[in-house]
Length: 149
Image 1 (cartoon, helix red, strand yellow):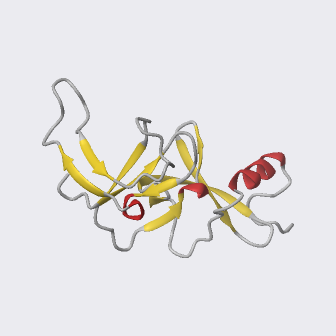
Image 2 (cartoon, one colour):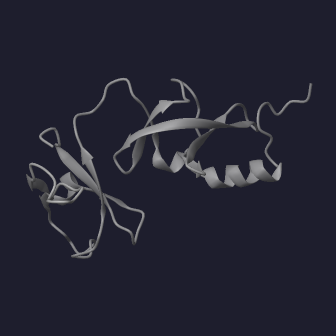
């Protein structure tokens, strides 16, 4: 917990990720361990709520530590999930896409670290991923090269 420098929040009622720093917020305190019989460490933040976050609502919190150099990171919007496995779509050419399994690491709510499955320079679909997925499943957009040999 001493490595935590900030946090991002995501509410269950919208897709927006709130940054503690943009809400004039700060980490007030954190517990030194879990509560008796529990699996959670209490963490307390203070922030300026301009009416966008419902008081008392459950939120998903992404604790932020120092950045990691030379990490491959993609927007969360680039991921699809099937039966516990994660995939991205790689752009091969103007009309060709390839479904690529990836292993995901930590997320800040907006971006996710890719531990394996991608290489530097890969072109990943970041918007309209579900449309590409639906088109690929319907056979409209061929996976792999779109040329006939």
